[in-house]
Length: 405
Image 1 (tube, rainbow, N blue to C red):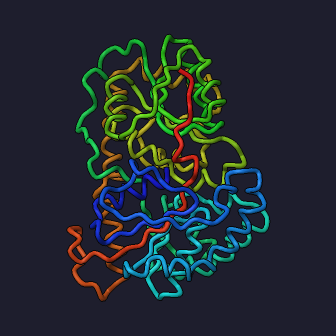
Image 2: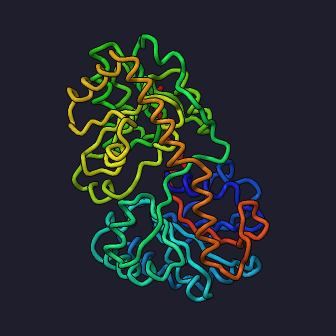
Image 3: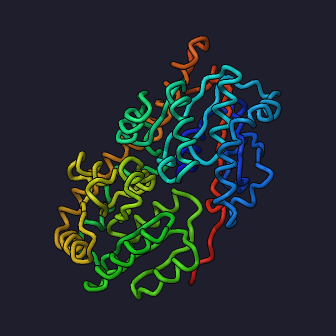
């Protein structure tokens, strides 16, 4: 998810130089960055945003968000921030941007999803108008993909920099695929990891059907609403694993049991604007496993475009059919050398694009460039800026849904 990606980048930031302001929902303390101070800055009606009243209150919260800058200034006064970093999502970003402008602090804006296009009517127009004001003024604009950089440059006449999803600072890294990958794969096992909206559930059903014809199985490590989970678990060759707490444990489990990682994207036309420019965070960990990748999505989606631009990094499926998946799986089962070649390229490209050092280097570079009065900013944090990170958490992200056994 977007927030876990951002937190990974900040894991190594000096703890006394970072203050995290949470809106909408409070995070689970077990998932927080150790040693960092967290403060809450909620709307009075925050709980109602998770009810049917959301359609009425969300535009009001969006409109009201910049006018809360005074309250935010009072909340963080003792911290003495030198920069503000926020993610374009929900309402906190509007307050953070207004606060940065009011206090003449550098604003670092992170765009992970095309959240603007997921809104409707008045709210979309309001967000778009505010971005036309704040996006060009930001000290830095960090976008999750080069496709998003280009799209936002076209819309708001300001260029940004790419900050791909990042692995954690202590991520496990394998130099080679597992030895067993070159031997016979029985039963052939595909693994999926991540949250599961309906469109992903349909993709998992297609994969389960394709595998069932050849005696294969599908491992699902993920979270889903109960009604979605129950549909997936009706497939006899699906093994649902409970949510794994750490990415390291997930990587090791997939490496030990699976023969390939499955990365589906949405084919729904209504999801197209976001699918074109966003980037699946799961690729950061999937490429760390050291197994072949199957990327399944329309030609225009970012994951497929990335795979096309990096030949040999994945098997690519762009036909929304069971037959297309069956042919791909059959090719992987038949050719052990092909499996190993894909796995090695996945390891190589994963480290190149999603390695923690690349992400932290990008972050420190933009902070240093925006605050020239702070000389010698380095990774050791000796002269790191005092940062406010202002984020809105999705209520669903902090809830582990009940899933059928």
